[in-house]
Image (cartoon, rainbow, N blue to C red; front, side, top):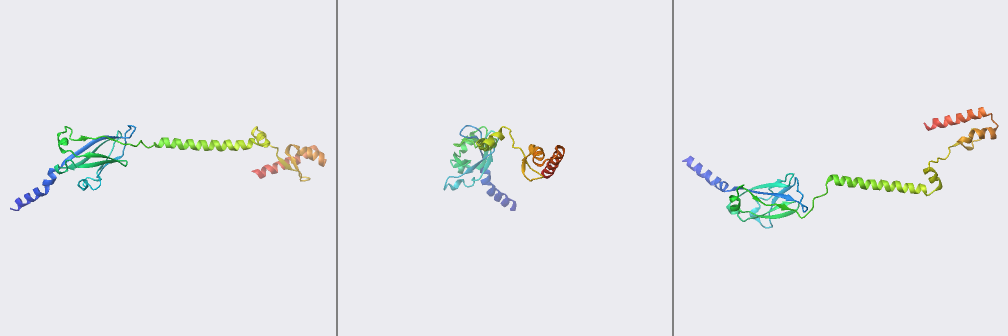
Length: 214
């Protein structure tokens, strides 16, 4: 007797489950330009105040590299003609559950393609190239402005042509600033030094200057 009751109880519990069948919707998701929507989620949503489809709400599947998808729900005869929404990237597409057409399908699925109104987002490679191009233009304009400022003065034009002003040295005798290549002559003429002594003294000034620069 207990076994009979247990069998009847299980039958009552499993009867609604047995009546439900796997309902498949397959299709290809594309952008407005016809390119595939790759690796993005197609999910089931419901129209406002459409409470009968809430049991399917949130069911989702990921598109493959070609934009193909197959979303699977459990539907029975009570859900026949029920409207659900297939949502992708903020856009929705109406699908009406058709149990008879699904059962008559040789592949056990119904087909519904999705084409978005939006175009694909720019790729990371394109954005990276765009950033590089903007940075290159900014650097080029900065160099051009600096070069223009240099060429606007006589000294800047001489430096741009390769001219460098001579280094000024301090005379060890009178502390006067003298052009580097004129120091020996200055020591000989102005301070009456022997050419050899003038050369040695200039060498000391140069060595001291080099040591300070190091």
